[in-house]
Length: 389
Image (cartoon, rainbow, N blue to C red; front, side, top):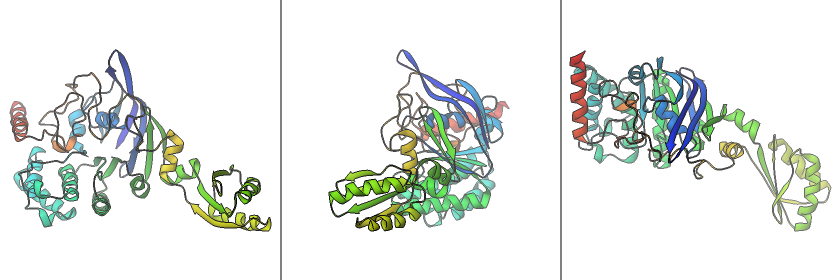
């Protein structure tokens, strides 16, 4: 579904060139659910903008959903859905009508637009509020509508840019269940970014980590955790003297170096910690060293991320190459690429990432400008394009 070959993007910032993405090469197969992770400024938003044809790469290329992003951007946009971070839709329009309008933007007939809207209302459990206006919805309901809008034209590939950001835990869980249900029913390929590492750990079959414009890890979450981190053992002792003695004993038991986190606590990161911990307690007891508390915490993706990048996912930008992923346009001096920017006929609302293109007007979650006036202009342009053909 996605094949990239040396995809690179450089921006002009001040008097110098900044490389936001460097030699990006990877493949995503049909039906995969891939989490694309990286700290702010790592290059992932620029990567998404290239893959969704909003930004033209400086060099390299990619095929997305069977179409070349340079030679056939309209073909790419017709086959993908993309849900960004901003709320979609006209706030004054009902949910049901918003879905039907989206179908019309994608060229569906009136009958097919109605049918598709009804299907998505059922599959994403929107029936309870299908006749409410968008402005009357809760945050979780709006995100489910966003996903539905991205699926109106039944794309084989869905891009999700932090789909659950800002939702409470219950709404996040509910949204993810609907995403997984749709994927199971239709075999949709999902490529997502998220700041919630537990989501990537639970749901993604594959995790890609990007830093400083390059992919630095690409594997399953379980393999990454096994290779790069281990179980964290924590042992507490009654006295500082016992702690000092325990360091020497534990050093002989494990390949990892024991470290004192405070005067009475030792931590060490090891593979197979659940087996080592009881043995360590027995050996320490035989040496007359009493363990007053002991825990074994399994590895996490947060530990993997820290090991790979040296910081937490929510830490500050990795470099000045890309603005914050959460609010769109990087601080760069480059006009929108006319060839890459979606036209009204070929790029309906679900085929873009909102507000990410440098210099572009603010957009709704699924890509068209949020104002009714801009929406009207887009529709008129689409009709004119169709008439010319």
